[in-house]
Length: 56
Image (cartoon, rainbow, N blue to C red):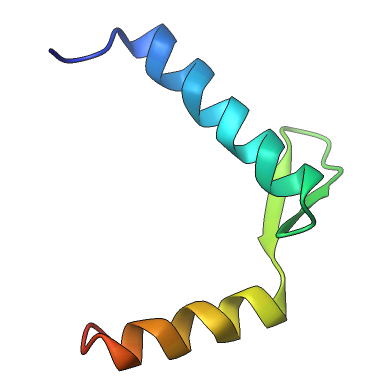
């Protein structure tokens, strides 16, 4: 079953909120819309895991 677009968007926003709450990404203020930035430590860790899995 494919989720409704509104449900998918709501789920995505909830996941982003969890990442921000757990300090895995930063929410940046912007005039047009919210912007998010992956922390360097999180990015480095993710890249290491991708390399280990042979997917980078």
